[in-house]
Amino acid sequence: MSTPTWRTHPVTPERFDDFADVVNPNRRENHCWCLSHRLRVKDIEALGAATPGDGGARERAMRALCAKEIPPGVVTYRDGTPVGWCHVSPRADIPRLTASRLIRPIDDVPVWSVICLVVRGGQRKQGVTGHLIAGAVEWARSQGAPAVEAYPVDPPGRMDTTMAFVGTRAMFEHAGFEVVGTTDAVASKMPRLVMRRDLRAS
Image (cartoon, rainbow, N blue to C red; front, top):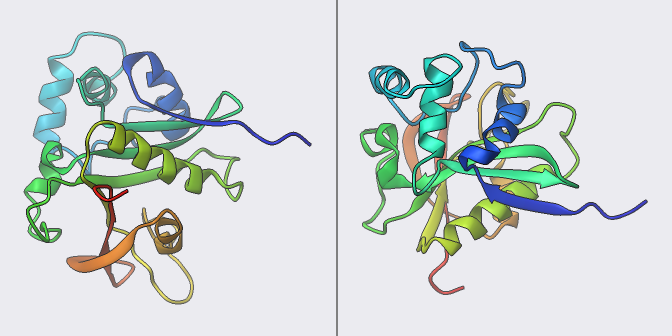
């Protein structure tokens, strides 16, 4: 059996369909387009309405974000097939996060933030998440990020698998992240951690 080839790329407009194949393969307007943790509803509607093209307002809004100089994340491919999505970008470019009173900055470092990880259906438990996090970190590094943060939950016992970042602490630790604090945000009755990978000394 040959060793898989892994690649991670920013989600440019040309790669939008690959992103959609991971997070919303049926292109449902009311399904996730990875916007709710980034923008307020009125901002999504305004961005979608201002962007011509096919699809509903949420799809058009995400297409518009992918056309920006710094797109909202990366897609990981295994042997050329898109298998994972990571929403990673400068914290300052994520309005919902910058306005949050629950996940506040711990210092003045202009970090990039990971706010979502998605593994494509049928591809789980095959090592995708580790490659996805590593690829996201390298993309951030290539764009001059001084550090990358994530906000996972690490509950004991049975995990609520409907919650993003539940049980992923070990994955981030394996990728060189360290716990540097906690937030006031709660998921699965547990506080979200602040985990950081400092890129300035590496």
